[in-house]
Amino acid sequence: MEKMKIKFGYIACVGRPNVGKSTLINKLVGAKLSAVSPKPQTTRRSIIGIKTIKDEKEGKIIQIAFIDTPGIHKPRNELGAEMVKSAIESLKTSNIIYHLIDSSEGIQGEDIDVAENLKSFLKEEKIKIPVFCLLTKIDLVKKEILLPMMEEVGKWNLYAEIIPISALKGDGLDDLIETTERYLPQTDEVLFPYEMISGQPIRIIIQEIIMEKIYNYLHMEIPYSAAVEVEQIEERENGTLYIKATIYVERKNQKKIVIGKDG
Ligand code: GDP
Ligand code: MG
Image (spheres, rainbow, N blue to C red):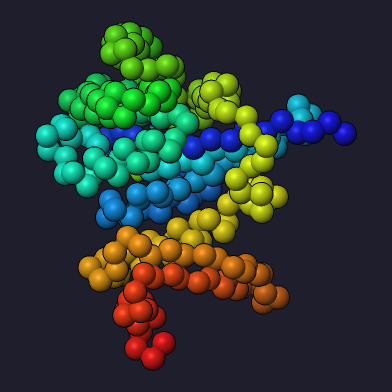
């Protein structure tokens, strides 16, 4: 049998709140997984969904890991240094950037701020990453409104592709995946081989969820440095999921903060 062709990539999703980021990712991944967290620092490297397409007929596997890049919808001078740093970090590790703009609301100042920030980050870091403009919620707008909008964003000289979609109705999503595939690098192996079987990155999601809980409950005491490793996932006969995970902390005194005194 011929070897499967594998493409893998990270995609950073940016856009002001409510443009439809979570809805799109949930739709593409086919499950509700985006860990919604109010604290931007938890999303430093946060994988919010993984889509694996195994096409036996074509002999190819495509795996996409979506990463969240919150909070860059403000003018540059209003962004904290930490925010800028973390946004750049997640952009740098991505192969494609999706910039979502809500077509039903028209182009807003914050959409332009996102575009400007993307431009300046990419320029400063001297990195070339294709940015796709996704005009979302097209089920709510007429073509007459959509076309000038596509023309307008085209003038910004930022986007490699402009794709209208409706995550709700599924419109444009095949086009989105096909176009995305063309931009993804070829690799020797997928990043999440275990999860590939089930099509869902269970282990990674569980790690992210535990990590998120740690930050949500203990964000003052525990700095970034904590890490979670899921070692075992087992479905018990009574239907419960047994998970064995190790939480690594930097200093000994942080251990009792996480697991409690005498824990
Ligand atoms: P986020 O803040 O960018 O993650 O946005 P959400 O995914 O939470 O979506 C914000 C709102 O827009 C929700 O009420 C969604 O149901 C709605 N929404 C998202 N995508 C679509 C779409 O394609 N069509 C319509 N009509 N509504 C959508
Ligand atoms: Mg969201």
